[in-house]
Length: 409
Image 1 (tube, rainbow, N blue to C red):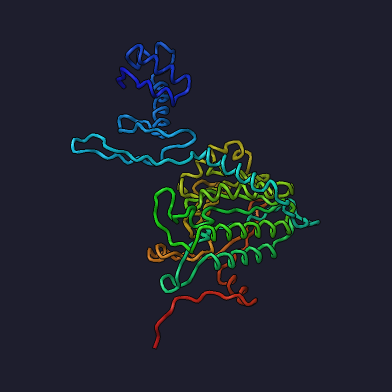
Image 2 (cartoon, rainbow, N blue to C red):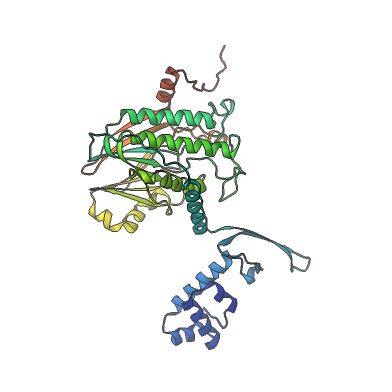
C-alpha cells in the first residue's frame, strides 16, 4: 500500500495511537517509513487507519465520496443522497441520520427507568413450594409476528393482533398448566415477536413494506399485555423465570426496549431474570448442558457451531450436551453440524402473510416446551399444534378461524 499523505481531518474520528500513525505517515511520506518510526507493522497502521475511516464515514465524512456534511455524536449517518450538476460536481446533498445502536440502547434504558420510577411495583404470584431443581422447561416461542395481517381469502386463514394475542396466550396457558413445578423456567422468545418495529411498517434494514394490522401503538399494547401474561403465568409454576428475547430482523428495536421494560418492571421481585440481549448470540449454561440462541437472520445454521465453540469456548468444553435454538425460518428442522451439537429451529403459531403464502411456504404451526436436564440434557418435550389450541379455545366459546374455501358440486 503506497501512501504519501493522510487527511488530517481523519484524526477527529481516531484514537490517540491512530493519530500518531497519521502524523508519522505525513511526516515520513510512506507507510513503510512510518511503521519503522513508530515501531509497529504496516498492517497494524493500515488496519487502524481503515477503522478510523469507517468511523468517519459513519459520521458523514468521506471526501472521496463527496461526503463532507457530518452529524454529531451520538448520531451516525443512515444514508446520503448527493445531487450532481451537468459537469458532475455536487450541487446538493441530503444526509439522513439515526442514533447509534449503543446510544439508542442507552436511551431506551433511561426512558424505561424514568417511566416506571413512580409506578407501583408489579406484584408477582406466589412461588411453588415443591419443585424440581434439575429439570428446566424451555418455552420455545417461535416467530410470533404480532401485528401481521392476513386474509383468509388470500392465505387460507385470517390473522391479526386480536387473533395472535388470543391464540398465543391460550397456548402458553395450556403448556404452563401441564408443566411440573420447577425451580426455573426459560421463556425463549426466538425473535420476531412483533411483525414490525416502526410507524411505517417497513423493515429497518431494507425498507420492505409489510402486511400489518392497523396501528403501531395497537401492536405495542398487545405485545406488552402478552409478555406480562407470559411472565405472570410462568411465575405460578417456577420460583425463577429466565427470559431470553432474541433480536429478530422484524422486531430488533422492540426487542431491546421490551427486555429493558421487563428487567425494570420485575427486577424488584428477585424472581425474574432477563438475559442481556445486546448481542445477537446468547448463551445459557445449566450444569452439563449448554444452549446458544440466535434468531439466525445474521448467521446461517452452518456457521453457528463455530460461533458456539469460539465465543463460549470454556463453557463448551466443560459441558456434555450442546443445543443451538434458532427461529427465522418458521419451519421445524434438526441439524447436526457437529457430533455433539444439535441445531434446531422451532415452529410458530402465526399464520402466513401473503408473501410467504404465495411463495409456497407451508410450515406446521405449533409451539413447544422442551424439558432440559442439568445432568442429562433433553429428556422430553411437549408439542402443542395450532389445531389443538384452536379446538380447546373453541371449547370455551372463543371463535377459531376457518380454512380456505373449496368449491364443490
